[in-house]
Length: 268
Image (tube, one colour):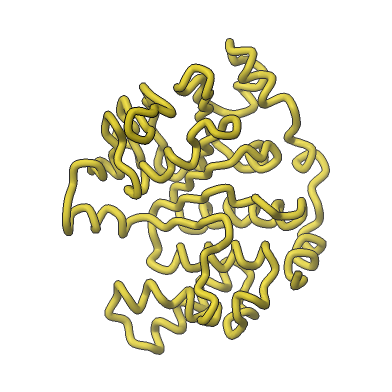
C-alpha cells in the first residue's frame, strides 16, 4: 500500500556534511505523524527535503506515490499543490489583513470569483476559530492567533497533506493545547494527513499516532512507532529516557476549552 509519504533510503545534509542517513519510513494516510529528536539533529532539514525546498543527498521521497525528488516542471508543481505548510511565526504578510492573507493562495491558484474567494477564506478562518479576525492586521494578533491564521492559509487550497514546523514554539501551555486540539479536529474533519516537526512532549503525547525519532549521535533514525509504546517498550534506552522526561501532564489534566479560547484570543 502506498503511503501518503514514503521516505526511501534518504540521506540529508549540506554538501559533504551529512546530518541523517539511511532514513526509511512511511507516513500513512490520515495519521498525525511527528518528526522528533534532540536539537540540531536535522528535523527541520528533513521537513524541507520532504516539501521540496531541499534535495536529498541520496534516496527518494514519494508524495502519494510520486517522487518530489525526480519530478520537474508542472509535474512537480502539481505534487506541491497537494500540501500546505505552516511555519513557526505564521509567515503572514504584514501589509495585508488576515482575510487577505488566507485568500491569497485562492487568488493565485484558482479561478474562483472574488465573492467565492472571500467566502472560502472566511470558511477556513472559522475552522481555526478566527472568523472574528478577518479584517484585522497580523500585528493585532497574539502569537497563538498568528499560528492559527497561518494554518487557515495553509488550508485554503484544501490540501490532503499538512506540514507543521515547530507549531508550539513560543506559545504558552494553553495556546499550545488549543493548537493541538485544532490539529486533531482538522484531521478528523478533512481527513488530511498531518506531519509535525516538534520536540514538545505534551503535544506529541496528546496528538501523535506515530513518531519517528532522529538521533544525531548515530546520524539516523532510532525509533518508529506510537510514542507511548516506544516510551515503555523501545529497546533503545535513549528513546525511553527522551520520551519519559515529560509529556502526558496536559492529557491527564487538560485545560477547559473555554479557558483555552479566552487566553489564546487575548492580544499580546
